[in-house]
Amino acid sequence: MQNIKIAIVIPAREKSTRFPGKPLANILGQPMILHVWEKCIQALDKQNVFIATDSDKIKNVCLGYGMNVIMTNESCLTGTDRVYEASLKIDADILINVQGDEPLISPDDIKLIIDKAKLNPTKIINAMTKITSEKEFFSNSVPKVIFNQKSNLLYMSRAGIPSNKKHSFIFGYKQVCIYAFPKDSLELFYKYGKKTTFEEVEDIEILRFLELGYSIEMVKVSEASIAVDFPQDIKKVEKILKGY
Image (cartoon, rainbow, N blue to C red):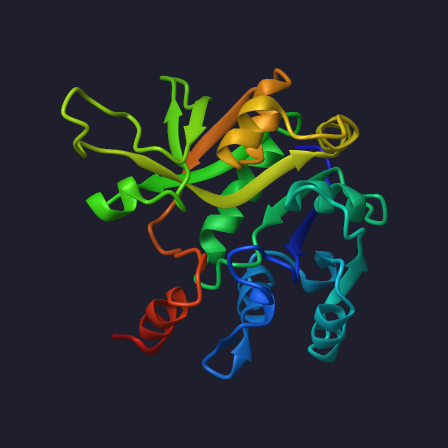
């Protein structure tokens, strides 16, 4: 296998619409971004793990914990645009984007995506897992995944898909926010300069790649992670971290 350089980038924005200041939200006495970073450095050497932020406040907290921080523009449209800006200062062939609101993310799942990326260095890869509840299936904060028999993404939506005539929950898969991006794909994504049609409507950034003609391989991972979309999600995460 050729020597492929890998880096993890964790985008962290302070001005979240649904949850302002989310990366610094307190989880068992520590900021959420620290929980995510600690999971990432179990998957990859910490010298290759970076926080990408537009916030001096987030930067200072992260530096206090010894993290690598790269400052990006406040005008970035998405976390992936932020990863591209960070990639300009990182010596890596493939960038692994791990969302900063996944404090329960599994290091083994991150390693799985890294290994898949090394085997397919020109392909965009995104994690997914099975949906286990009707509530999650119909939640508009959960992107649902439709893929073909080769596990390539067909579409992703906040609506409950696949649906049926009764609009009932039969089964489903949801996106887990671990992505692998070849560096050149990030450049095209960023330089497009605006959100694509379905990306704009769904507010799901991976759709920009799909709409620009990229093939995206979906990889099944564990059900360990819970995304923190709203302040009330913190309690669910803390219960799991406490072991009950």
